[in-house]
Length: 228
Length: 228
DNA sequence: CAGCATACTAAACACGCGTTCAGCCACCGT
DNA sequence: ACGGTGGCTGAACGCGTGTTTAGTATGCTG
Image 1 (cartoon, rainbow over the protein chains, first blue to last red):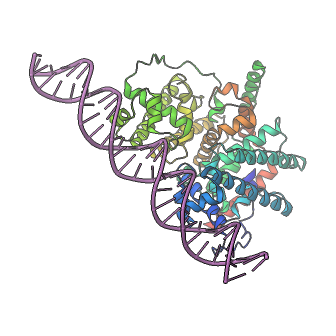
Image 2 (cartoon, chains in turn cyan, blue, red, brown):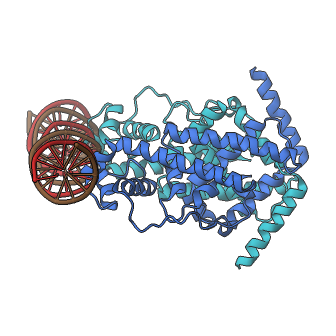
Image 3 (tube, each protein chain N blue to C red):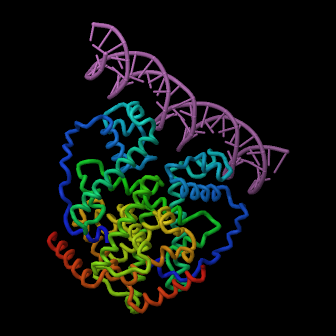
């Protein structure tokens, strides 16, 4: 699910003039998101961000207080953007992947890449975002079950969480996906069929024969019971 | 598959005296792996590694030449260890997850955590390791198909690659898995049923009803054709 | 025993980091 | 016209970084 259920190509998104006529504060924030996405937070210096935004290093501190606070501001900004786009997508209708929200901002800072990077350095804001994604997935999949599109699960929340982890995990490893499959997970899904087609195969019908699946399931269930 | 097919608990692994009577060079290497795994390469200083190994910073450079070279040495050491354990596991019999190799070294440096960290900073040695994992998965799954345990795939290599990406991706996001499911993906799989049970459900039989799966598959196939 | 390579350290080096400070310039209310 | 406020900069500060250098102890080789 998730990206898998996305059938439509990426639309233009809001105009977002992009005439570089943003306030300096916004320019710094966008530049920081881009730099952090490319080199990671630890691998980016305040001076690098300042240069990318064509301002002095001092101005970065003037506006955000410290590098750490800048990082938090980026987290919050990205989170807000995601939530905004998510509800917009919801209103538009179900069936679109939640990442579509992030992809629409083609002209702005690379939100998906930023997320892929920061997912691994323990920011509480990003963690909250992930938690929300899982809750959304739970609700969304429940609808799918009621509509007869998805099979019911023994552990709906667990299933949604694992699906989210796998989808986000693949995103984090997009460099490897690119090398292994030639698919750019940060770009248009329609151009990454080398990833989504096998993914759909697994998510759709699984890869085990029913007997094997049944047997393994039984074994795991016993293990779980032994523990409690 | 992978971790999913692992049914046995983690065995002791080689004795690995661990009397701290290692050569200084080895102590530094192990300390570096631990530090890099915990704070990332960029977040770890040569002085930190030196302190963890109870030596002077200069000795680290003396033995490895530079921090970057130390990092490469760690990559190569971990890769060698993985390959070694992998072939040992192969000899022992199939059906065990390849990560078991990494988990056996409980007393040594945290290999799995190191991999989970370094998977995202583009080391060629780690990339080569991933490539090998995919090739192993391809071969392994082919055996499964022949044995009638796994369904055949439209794209065996793609399927193996995606499974590897998902498994490794979840590993990289183990912090989120811990928070969402209370499951420690770096530890004993038998204690992480909250992750492996839903995972098995998805991998085993998928989550879509056959009609929906069929329909989506058809749509994706058309998309792919339009591109070529 | 002399000679020498090797393991190792303390101190220092240059450099880049995040951050601070003093001051400039433009705008705005009065 | 004036005072002040806020956006903004250049230069500097202190610190931690990776690395170098000089020097000491140790243990092997002739």
